[in-house]
Image (tube, one colour):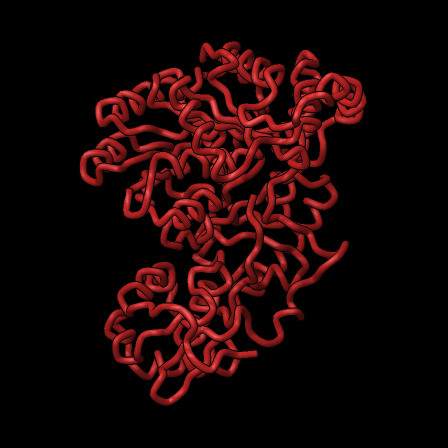
Length: 484
């Protein structure tokens, strides 16, 4: 049932213009229909909550530097779709999280190919690890089951892996969490608060941006060039000019670009962060998916150059299985102690049995990871082959690791393509999801975590959808999708 009056706060014309950054870019404005679609995308992404009061037509027209006629036509369309409600004397507000007829373009079940999530299935060897963990569980049944720091056997094996890769670590420098995102949120809550700036790469992992926004902190983007990598000079300037409270980097097979920072850049970046005394969260969720060798033979962890300012987070989700829901934080013992004290406000630890399973997997001599890398390499090559066949105009750099390609499209159409792809049974996350203020309409992330035959079929459908997009401008926005 639609609300009769606005339920939440008002968004100003200036703020809404900022949120509509991708629509305002040159070459991406097509009129009232596209403006309505852009507003709908903000609603579907949760950036305009249900009940948010919209600015007056004149105010929004001035902020966007367009005519009131265009604003009126866009609002008329949003009202016709049930997304906006209006009442004389009360103005207009967001009334529904989606327009009519959306179910018709969202296939479900086996026909839907989900390319929004980069989640491989369970690694080979999981069942034997479960059997071994079941036997080991007997030794813990007499305990209370609360493991705020994490099982010592698992922390020792995580610490051993860091040491092998060039970051000497002991078990007391590790805390087990419920996934890497949980780890990120824990550190963010401890080190940053409302109004604090957090330096991030652009593009970057969408869920981290959501967490920063939920903490009422301010993300400060530094462009990451898919061809040349990290702009260390630009990062130094951002550190001086914005004074961030915290920084967040994915140095190994960055999500979504797949880039890996070289050792020299790691040293220069760490030196800049150390000079500014800016703590950095280093996300190593994808580090074990090195498709050209063992990560122990690659560049040292970024945390090795950061000292006590480095807080590294990791996860078993990509390397072993997301169903384990286990991650970890590696930091100084002082920081770990502070995180443990703060954790009681959120949760009381991670499940014991799953920790025992992961401990078994990390003690197999690397067999499970070697098999995972071999499988992932084959899927990467399958996806690149499918793109070269069905979408030859799309360009990309083949990554040396990770789980996704960052594809440059022939025109700014990522959001429109996501809409059209849904109609062809493929779910993708538009490039705007990976930007602080949207944009990135020339880019699309495509994971290679599904079986090869599904990847080929998905790309075939994307090619068909892209052809339709080139001929028809958007009149809708893609539904919200979970991005991992």
